[in-house]
Length: 117
DNA sequence: CGATTGACTGACC
DNA sequence: AGGTCAGCCAATC
Image (cartoon, rainbow, N blue to C red; front, side):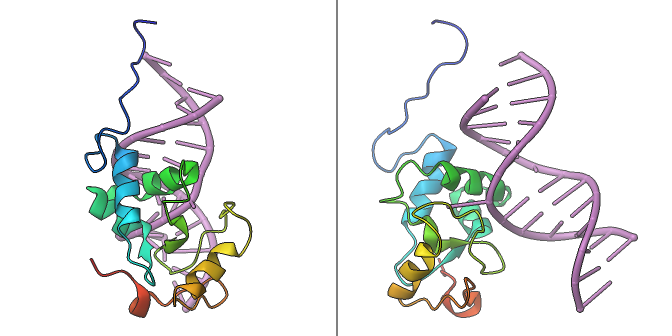
């Protein structure tokens, strides 16, 4: 193994995240309880507003859903992801409602519950 | 290493 | 008014 690509040392030290993914996770983890954020917002806070797709991919791999409340992340329409295959079904909606965020049929009122950094 | 996909967003018709 | 197309970045196969 010498050539080819080297493995970046993930888990640098808590906050310093040299990896884009870890950076996104750090932002998602900063979302306060009872509030939701959009992919674009997370991407912008992570460092680039064009990472919206990367954010979705990052949450898709979701290495640690226990500390990454991906259920607090919704698209710009306030609608939860259809491919929310984590946990199972409307589980995320229940979690949001449990935090004080009414998810009407999977749709949240961003005008009221969107996370304001 | 090259090509493809992906939990998005914004602009255009 | 609504639907469709393209763009962007990174990770995976």
